[in-house]
Image (cartoon, chains in turn brown, purple):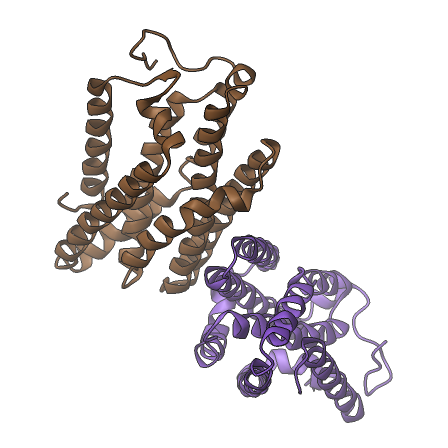
Length: 238
Length: 238
C-alpha cells in the first residue's frame, strides 16, 4: 500500500477517480505510452525472430510478439472506452520511444535478447510501480499488459548458452546492458519533463498529493536492484 | 474439378490418401513450405509495420502479421498430427524462402506494401491451385491459410494514394513488381527441382498420374492473369 504525503491512499474506486479531469489526462498518457510501447515491442520481437538462427526460436519469438500485440489491443480498447482516439493518445510518445529504439538497435540476435529481457524488464518494473497510483480497474490492465510472456526464461537460456560457448561475449553484452539503461533513463526523463499529467500521478499535482521523496528513493532502489538481478541471471556484470 | 491424365480425379478421401507414403511426403513438403512461408510473412509484415509512417498503419499491419502467425500455428499443428517434426519439415525451404526475401528487401514502406500484395498474391494463387490436388482435409487447411487478411485492400488504398500524390513513384513500383515475380519464379523453380515429392503432386509420380500439359498451361495463364490484375489494381503497369 502506497501512503501519500497527506496520509491518504490512492484511488479505491475507478468511477470516482475518472471524474477528475487531470487524473483522466494522466491515465490517457499512461495507456498511450504503454500502447505505443507494446506496438513497438511487437515490431522488435518480430525483428528478433527474423534474426533467430533456429526456426524454433523464430517461432517462439513470433509467438511472444503476437502476445504483445494482444496487449496493444487491450490498451487501445481502453483508450477508446475513455473516449479518446488511441492514435492521438500514442502520438506524444512516438518520438521518445522511437528514439530509444533507434539508439539501441541490436547488432545481433544476442543483443536483441538482452534488450528484450533487460530493457523490457526495467520498463515493466516501472509501470508496475506506477500501477500502485491508479484506480483498481486501471491497475488490473497495467499489471495484465506487464505480464512476462516467456521472454525472460527464453532470453536467460539462450544468453547463458552463448556465454558458455564463448565467454568473450559476456563483456560485450554487459556493456550493451549498461547502454540500454542509460538510454532508457534519458528518454524517461524527457517524457517526465514533457508530460505533466503523467508525472503528477507520481509526484502529485495541484489538487492531489504525491508520494514523499523517501518513497521515490525506495522505488528507484527497487528498480536498480531488479535490474542488477536480471543482469546476473543472464551471467552479466551490471 | 481437375481431371488427371488417366481420367481419375484427385483424392476424395483424406484417410485413403494418407496411406500412400509418397503422398504423405508431398503433404509434409507442402505444409512445411507453407509454414515457413507464413512465419517469414509474419516477420515481413511486422517489418512493414515498423516502416509505416502512421501509427494506425502500424497497428493494422501488426494485426495482419499476427494472423499470419495463427496460420503458421495451424500448419505446425497439422505437421505434428502427421507425425513429423515441424522444424524438420520447414528446414528444406528455409534457404529458398530466405533468399527470396534477401533478394527482395523493400527499400521503403511502399515497396513493402507492393511486395505484401503482389508477392503474396502470386504465392497464395499458386497454393490455391495446388490445393486442387490434395485430399479434402488438406485442401481446407491450404485454403484457410491462403485467406486474404485485408492486406490487399490496405495495400491498394495506400499505394494508389501515394501514386496520386506523386505519379513518379508508379514507374519505380512497377519495376519492383516485375523484380518480385522474377525472384519468386527463380526460387520456385529451385524448389521444384529439389523436392520430387512436392512436384509429383502436380506432374505425377511413379504410381500416381499428374495433370496434362494443357492443364498446367491453363494454370500458368491464370497465375499470370491474376498478377496483371493485381498490378492494375495498384495502378501499376505489369
